[in-house]
Length: 325
Image (cartoon, rainbow, N blue to C red; front, side, top):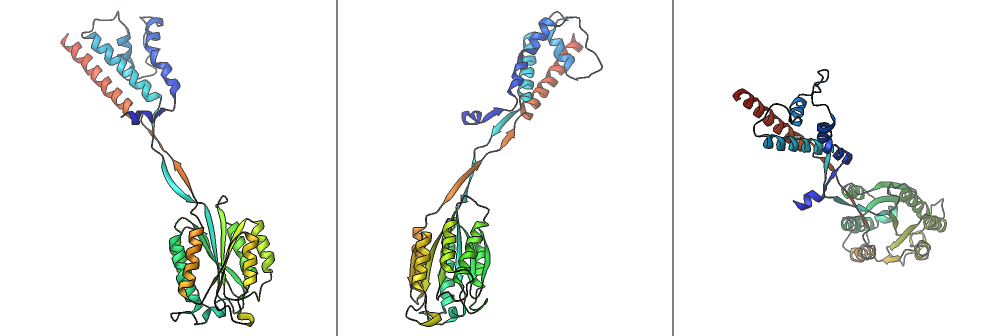
C-alpha cells in the first residue's frame, strides 16, 4: 500500500486550495442569501443547508457535518486529478548495427570444402549460426560479385535475414569480384540506419581479389574509417590458388587495419569458417540501451463516485428525517 501511495501524484495540486471554501462561505456569505435558480447544481442546495447552522434543527448534526466534510474532501481530491504512475517498463534497444558483406561470385560455387559443400554453402551455414547468436544486434546484408547490392536492410528481423541468406547462389549477380564497391555499399547502408547512436560494424568475406570495382578498395576502406565503420575481413578458400581466384590476403589485412578491425583467414572447411565467426562473435560485445517509460493512470473517478454515493446517502437521510419529523 505504501508503495502504491508513493506512485500517486496530482495533476492539479492547486485544487487543494479549495478545501477551506465551505468555511469561507459560512463566515462571509449572508445567512439569508438565496440560491439562484438560473444555474442548477443538483447537490448544491443540500451542501449549503449544511453550512447554515441557524437553519432548521437537524438530527444527528455531527454525523451530517462529518458526511458533508467527507464529501467536500472527496470532491477536492477528484478535482485535483490524482494519477497513478505505473512502474517503468523497460525494453532493450540494440546499439550495434552490423552489415554482412558476402561474396557470391562464380568462384563461390567451387565444391572444395570438406564435407562436400560448395564454398557458398559453407558460408551460408556459418553465417546463419552467427546471425542466430547475435540476438541483440540489428543486421543487414550486402552481396557482391560483378556488382554490389544491398540484399537485406538493417533490422532486428532475424527470420527475414535468414530467408535472404538462404536465397543466395553463386554467380547470381555476375562472376567477378567488386570488393571496393561492396564495402562502399555497406558503408552507405550503415549510414542510412535510423539508429544514429549505434556503433557500426561491417564483416567482409571473400574468396578472391578485387577484379571489378569502380571504387578502389583502399579508398573504400578510408571511406569506412571516415564514417566510423569498423570492418572485420575474412579471407576464405584456398590461399594457394593463383590468378584471379587467389584471395588477396594483403588487401584484406589493409582494410581491417585502416578501419580498426581484425582480419582472419579460413581454410576450406566448415569448422575453420565456424571458428572465425565464433571468434568474431566473442570479441564483439553486446551493446544495448535500456529504455523505460511509465503511464499516468487517472484515479479521479474513484473519489468522485464515492462522493456522489455519500451525497445520495446524505440526501436520502435528510428526506427521511423530514418525513418523520
